[in-house]
Amino acid sequence: MNKYLLIFLTIFSFPIQAMNKSQCDVSEDELGKRYPATMQHNMDRNYDQLRTSLPGLGTMGNAQIKGMMKMMGPNYYWPVSAEGSTKNGVLIMAHGYGPGGDLDLFNSVQDLSKKYQTTLSIGMSMMTSSHVVCSVNEMILNNVEKIFVVPVSSSPHNTLVRQWNYIFKLEDNYAYSDVERINNEKIIMLDPISDHLYAKKIILDYTNEISSDPTNEALIIIAHGPIDEGDNEIELKLMNNIGQYIKKYTSIHSIKAFTLQDDAPKEIRNRNIEDIKTFMKMSEDDGKRVLMVSNLMSGQGIQRKLKKDFEGFDYVFNSKGLLTHPYYIEWIKESVNKQIE
Image (tube, rainbow, N blue to C red):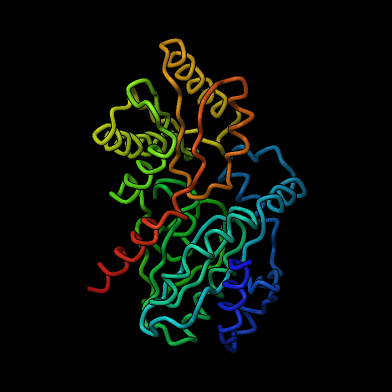
């Protein structure tokens, strides 16, 4: 009950600003989520660009892709508070985790919103950036002098972050399709958390929550993973850095990092699943209790798929995501403060 009271108190204290109707004709739901009206333009071009950018969609028709987009959830923005500093705003960009996961993120940034004007921008931005454009416009109308953009991602080396960078004119090429871009000197893009010390501490905490006999345990650190193989190698290096940190501060027998490459072609994902199963079986045969943690941002993402993937194996999975841990908010605060100093 208190969680929902917090939401409504926050939302109704937020002053609705006059907005540029040509870009920001929005509808608002009972929680304060704002959905820009769909812009009318040649969507066929975007579908063609998506099929080129993501080979896995190559054989899909427009209607199939549209259905897939609908399953991913809407693109929208969600003002958390306009009560913080008028000088600095924080725009937190996430691909979306479903109603429950998005609510977790909203509630986790309440403390941050007391210091900075804070807005969530939710969605993959694959065929539109209206939600990003409108959230930036609204902050500017609130007289924010600097907008610090926080990409909620485990790494900068993936198509999602590249698409966001394209929107802010930090990359020349789109990762999905050509969408409206933003060129504004008020915007400062921060780096994702990657293998920052706070990421290491969070995953260590989650490991300790499920560990009971470290010397007789094997730990899997699992990630969503990017599509591209080169990006995947970089992500595995970042994860191995996290694994080395956990090894330093625990006596867990063996630690191994894996990526699913969940959006890659099916045969690539299946290969990664088989590699993980091989490690699990070897660990079980060696008498080790298998633990699993992740660097996933939300606890309500692909975790349900993993239950089916590893059906029949005996393991303990701490499915919590990074973004609801207090250290994640501390990381955002420190990242913003470094830019301000």
